[in-house]
Length: 249
Image (tube, rainbow, N blue to C red; front, side, top):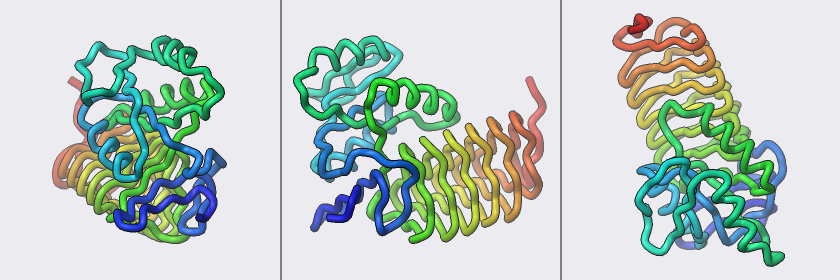
C-alpha cells in the first residue's frame, strides 16, 4: 500500500491523506491504514454523502457533531453538541487508542465556518482527511490540501491547486491551472474554465460557469446558473447571464 493511499479492491473508493503517488496532498497526516474512525462535523444532507463514502471504505462514523440541537441523522451514531461536547466525548474515550479523524459535512457558503471548525479540531489533535470519490477525475499533478473533498463525477484538471477544507461538488469541473482558495465550495455541475483564481471562502452555486482567467475575490458568491465573464470583487454576489453584481438589500 502506498503511503497515505487506500483503495478497496472491488469498490475502488479512495481516501487520501498525506503524500501519495496519485496526486499530491499538502502536509502530512495519519496514514489511511491507521484510521478506522472518522467523526463528522455537521448533521444535515452533506453528512449522508460523506458517510456513504466512508462506509464503503470500511471506515466507521462513531459520532456526528453539530453546534445546533439536531435529530440524530443516523441510527446508532452518537450526536454531540459543539466543541465542548466533543472534548467530553474524547475524554471518555481516552484509552490510548488512535484519535478519530474528522471530515467536515458543512456545504454551501459556510467556508469560513469550515475553516474555523477545522482549526478547533486540529487543536484537539484530530487529523483531517481528504476525500476523493472513485468516479472523480484528478490530474496526477493536481494538489489537494488536507480536508478537501472531490465528490462524485467531479473533474480536477492539470496544475490545479485546491485549498484546505474546500469542496468540489458532484459533477463540477475545475480546468487547468485554477487556484482554489481555502474554504471554497464549487457547487454541483459548476464549471471553472481554466486559469481562474478563487479566493478564500467563495461559494460558486450549482451550474454556474466562470470563463477563463477570471479572478473571484474572497468571500464572494456566484449564483446558481450564472455565467461570469469578468472579475468578481471581494465580498460581493453576482447572479444572472451574464453575471452582474447584486445590489445589497
